Image (cartoon, rainbow, N blue to C red; front, side, top):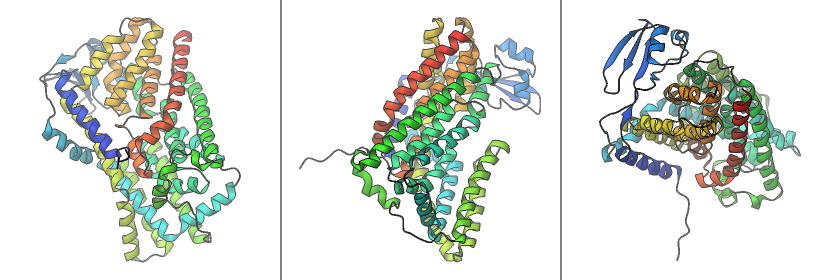
Length: 499
């Protein structure tokens, strides 16, 4: 009997990409740019050359000018630029460092070590949700919400997509959205939608927001600082893109959602509905929405409000966010009246449900570790920068966006890509008569587009959270991706020819 092909899991997809990354380190020349870092305490610059030797320089604007680094010294002094910056014109070949079998096997372990902050955060979220499930508050809350939105379920899509996109464009809301899936998936299932609708509302909301960043410190601010300009330059074009892009995304999701609401067989996940139902309850029981359960859900929601405030205003990161949800979990357990043994058991069981998500995050990080250790990322940047130099402004900026898409696959961190690539690409823009703010726009567009689908980013972890395979996501998002690329190209050409 012929076996039916099933798409591999996220783990297999990531290990295939990891293997390909190892192969690249054998066939691509190893190379590096010199990296410049600033010691705020000593007030000096240190330039680490490709061969590993270091030079010290005075921490002055003259030093930056001499090295050809187009930045304001104040950005280093106030901590706006806190990562090593690539020095233009310093690329050199270095000794090849191919990543073999040993490195292939160890990389996922190193990836987990390197991602322990977000992994532990995910575990704590799972634990808190386990306790809330035990209290019955989720079932009661979803039942009440379903009654309130009956006949207008599409409002759930609009509300979530807009809210998360605002977080993405202002302060880079991305990894934090992992926490939203377990609580919102049952809501969307109860509304008659499938898990893809929920994933799209959350993930695309975040992605479209970060792609059209306005004040996002991790991309547009760091990138602008690295280019030696203010992040407010070009903000009008990014705002225009945000409004149009958000409207396109909402229309696309609502259109798909309305179709499967009328005819469930049109769902791309129709063949997976039973499997997904095992993990998320779509048949919500009519449990009483008591005062105690209302208080539990209010505390849970307030935890997200505090988290968002802490990240955007207080400089919180995963340590503080994890501690916040530990406190929230204990408080919810006390209010729910569950015993100590029940609390611990449900908390541990909830965290265990997210073990797979944690492993996906760690393996995804291991791909970047292989490329970093193989020292091929700078070589790829050097080659791409040579390809786009000397072109007409219109062709240059379009190709530049695609260059950043390629680099976004190899360097998933927006701040890391900004500090590495922008100091190299900004002078190229000067040479072809393109304003530097357009380079920043191309940078956030390119990396934002790649974030829709790249396995090295957050999408596989998000899909694993809701037990949806990668091929289903690609079938859903690729048509939308094409539309967004056309929009991005149009805005870039508008900015180049009007600026």
